[in-house]
Image (cartoon, rainbow, N blue to C red; front, side, top):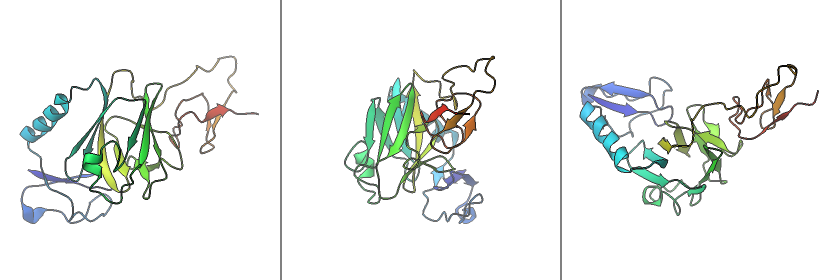
Length: 212
């Protein structure tokens, strides 16, 4: 069994023979001719898992380049700069449309947050392509796809201090104040509780009390 992974929407495509290899993604219609075929056997999956285990990271990030399987090991740090002349350059230096200083990853309150550094082709997270320049400080979670331009990297996060929940309340809403609401400065969505991360645009630390 072989498979292809669409570099736009991350859809898996399985096939047995080369003659059955799909040319277009069934999910988003992106051409697949340039995507490298991956052996989808259980033994290969076990081998890939062992590679990650061998890093021995208790805290940090491993990025897997989805087109080649190359791995970028990122030991934990409060601030990480990804780019062709920075962290990950052993893989990224051969991809000319990735900038020398492409994006910044910061570790804040148990979360890895990504901000684009005015790169040439942008930085995005997930199939919905959350824009890390328009909305700075987008959370990168385990198994997220991080796009440097259109280049997809699967994030494996080793973080013993974070629960990686989508939403974490800063404070509980007082039962005596049921009308108290909060607004995201990034996208304007109104929330019923004070959140660290907006569930609409993914912005970090942009929620403030709504004056009514």
